[in-house]
Length: 54
Image (cartoon, rainbow, N blue to C red; front, side, top):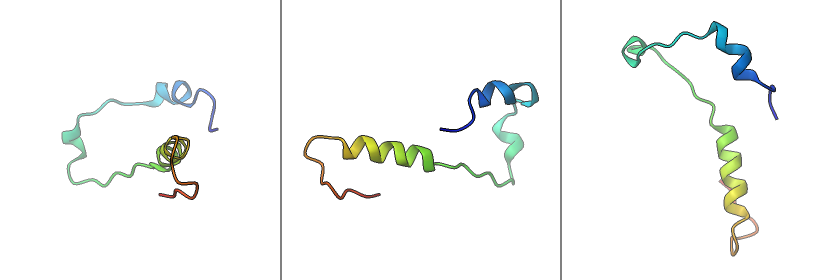
């Protein structure tokens, strides 16, 4: 799922900055993919309830 080689495609336009330069700024992190992955791992655990939800 997602764009194949996305990070390789974006790398030429990336700038590495320190956290200090982010002071006073708002950043957002989309964790939905990690949440779904962790739910899949947890629900596949033996003995997990069949209706397990986040």
